[in-house]
Length: 474
Image 1 (cartoon, helix red, strand yellow):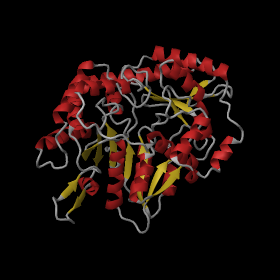
Image 2 (cartoon, one colour):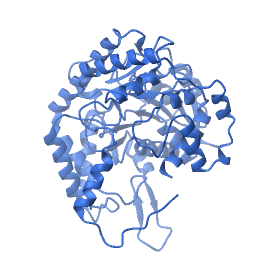
Image 3 (spheres, rainbow, N blue to C red):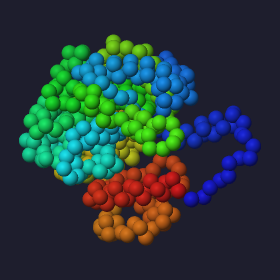
Image 4 (tube, rainbow, N blue to C red):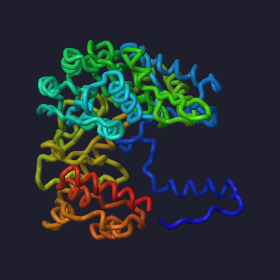
């Protein structure tokens, strides 16, 4: 990897900020709703400005030692209290995001519920990959259970998958890919009958579903008030609209929360006690989340949740009018997955055509019989009319273009490729041969790449994606 030396003399602030602005030119926009994943916009500039100010105020405060900085204890207590009040009580931890919250929940379950041999985690096929990551890091074995025709986890299959080695059972509220709710009470009951903890992944839904219920919508039970649910994760940087780095994991039993902690006195330095995976970390996200929650308030969240759900319903109705497209499942949250019912209409080409029109539609690959599709996260400021115009135009262009032209033998060749024989430069050359130039900038043509990945088994996809990331940063 080529390296540039650090400038001998410090550079002027104006020049550095100008360079940051130039680098940001190629980024997707974070406001306005044209990016239907990754970012959440309240449309309330004063709230965004307040969060930035609060972030800056807490930027240099280190969450490593709450006795040195008692402000972090006060802020975290309030934030966790707000979340617990909406999600059935319990005690919790403020973390950097859903993956860390899930990591803590898995660690707590593993340590609080020791088993003979390698512990297992029982997951629906639609569960977030953060559980696979946690299992990989923490030494658990993943046991998959199928989902039904509506993409909801199967309670009977879940119960049948529980063994004496099961340390944790998981349900989603909702699952990210399709916005549908797993039958949490039935899954939690199966876990409780076996004496096993049950975690509900409400990272994306935890701060929108309660407000939809408050607004009078029928939201199935899913939180810590459900018998058998022992922990739940809720991201505040999603439908809480806080800046990134804000999530909460709640535990029904405070002793389980303590099992999420880590402490070490096995060295001569300062005593280490961590509530999260990270040690030193800025309190900026904590301050920004606290400010955002208090600035928006309960009424604001009810309005934002209802507006987002209405946007999702309008999108669902609009998709029905686009020839060749259909919605997967029955979303209970503002998350919608759109698939093609016409072989001549390719969703990956639609995504590329939408990018040309200034929109980002998130592609999702096929998996266990679930077709490839486009994911849409709707927020309180989503302009559904403009989105549908972009989707309709992209679909028309995609139909005219036809599916990507992928050589018949390329997928097989990639499946058999010895990736270890290629360095990062060689892999970048391989990508360039299918139209992805890592050094060229601009808007990538991803339909061919996604089509190739879609034809490969998950393990091969993973290996290729790891090499892609390595080559990208090289």
